[in-house]
Amino acid sequence: MTTGRAPHALLFDLDGTLIDSIQLLLESMQHAFTDRPRCPTTAEWVAGIGTPLRAQLAEWCDTAEEAEQLVTRYREYQDRHLEQLTTPYPAVLNMLAWARQQGHPTAIVTSKGRIMTGRSLAHVGLADAFDTVVTFEETERHKPLPDPVLLALDRLGATPDRALFVGDSPHDMHSGRAAGVKTAAALWGPFSREELAKASPTFWMTGFHELPDIVARLD
Image (tube, rainbow, N blue to C red; front, side, top):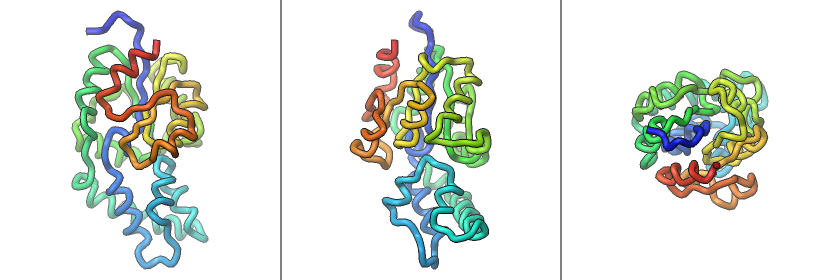
């Protein structure tokens, strides 16, 4: 049943927003950089979460060949441990069911690849929870630029003025703002409130259960 209000397009980041996969991302990074003289600290790696993997890894390589080797090692570890180290955050499944029930079109906007996104969603019971899924492969430019958000809106037949993008990283907030949508910063991910504040989110969320209240404030 709907409330009688016009629906809003609800867009969501994946890692750190809907699913707790941060330990998986960190362990995959550590595995990829094993025995290498140059490697990021945990803080340096976390700062890049939400941007494409290859771009993150390339910053620590001297050649494209080295970067590809690291991508392979990273993905091998991720492939073996994805299900073990991925869980949905509290209230995510119920709140996404609520969003669909209320008639709000929904989308994933992630820098993760198509295959791993599909596996992650299936593992946590969200394979059929979204009207569209925008992954890394589908735009030439990525977060923090607006292109993935704009593609999701186009597929949903939605306009920026009636859309919300929920994410846990500054990259999500910048991407949403650049696309002209309102943004909600998820404080349960790896980024601090201070880091997120620099990207000027429209709303703050301390838990996914707050989604209906945020949506009610969009009109």
